[in-house]
Image (cartoon, rainbow, N blue to C red; front, side):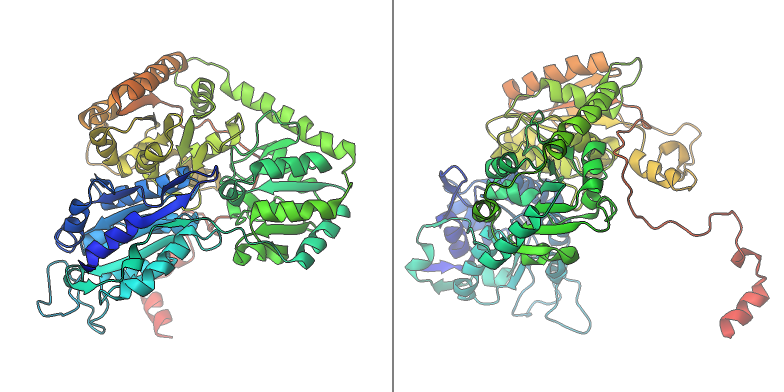
Length: 614
């Protein structure tokens, strides 16, 4: 059929279907987020308008925000559905690069369709074209290459026939999942071609479950059977595979204590007898204690990021690492015994090899013992106090008032440590999204908009600091305008508190983080009225100054969001220096010299000049 490039692309998007973990058939691309400008308004914009009943288009208000919303949608959909974002050329396109980085770091599918300059070059240079002096084929969209799993620039309509199957492959593959960028020159978008009908046949995508090599499975079983103190670490790959129940059954059969990574959080019910808590910097002392004592670690579906491994100090130096991962890139890290395959399939194949082997009961019981100590610590941190509440107290209230199907999320600052370390999950479906692969400030609000689209079984609550709110808040209005309910808890602590903590904790002086330590020409600088601002963006707003008020405000916000079908924002003043500590180490670059005056400062200008000459 004769279609423009843009029409063909939209028709293909509509034809793609996806099988969910519970066997339902859903659209692979349930939503497009768009801001139009020259480069996409007449080509792709027209094609989307023609098919508006078949594929919803949601208007964003920053390109970064709407692309982050698409990322949040994919996470909430367990990678079974993919958000699409389109922009104009130039700054509109470049604004989405950060979101591509978020998706790349977190292994989440995302389809980006930035407009591009003319392939004909006849009108060059066009508005928003940067003009590379040494290569006329380069445009700003080439900046997406390092943060894309798959990149293509469509310079002829018929190129779609070859590239679209690759797009689908990357977006639905458990090992390669990540952002795909198709740069769309605006003249090519509107060119026509006789596309084969077969390109638009309905396709149902089932995420593949590759089985591991039998020899690798046998070697892993041998390593585990020799262990005296094994530990099971569950990551995001377990979540996306739907392997949580099988992993817990495996642990139960053999008495192996279980921990979670940030991406794997809420896979294990908090009261499970084998649960030792979350692992790493933002985790629990209980899990980190067992990790230091373990002689064999079975890691499943994790990329073993530095916050999980405490910069590789959380495990004993002589530990044996066995790693199940669908991506061999991850499976071989740090000399692990690599078992490359789907998490659910690999655990299924590993079980017969383990036979009736079981860990000594003293080690099995240790998980509950150490976690009880951590629970008591969290109870102490959550206990009500006078004055502004701590982050732990705020998390405790949200935890208490949330239902088993509700969804909680955060991304940056100090909140990941509070949410990952302190949250008590009911088990069942994964109900947490902590974007701590890229730690992107602003994801908390934009990602929550996308999550609210995908997570319809419960209410989405996103938790963030004042810094993240100021970084990117425009998608609150997008969600309010579109009619998607969510609750945003904004902890106002007067600045970038967690970075100030890092700065001062490593011996630095307070500088440029808390507002009190920032340069200003005012003796009495202004403050942001977050409540008034959120209200102006169309949100229901509630405020609190102490923990009792917050409990009431959050309860009312939940009701308002659900009934009024819009975001509800709770602004709460929080203590900036009260933290949940997991007792783990993180490697950062610390200056070797912190005195106010260095040898370099004492060099005279003439000496300095001669030294440079020499």
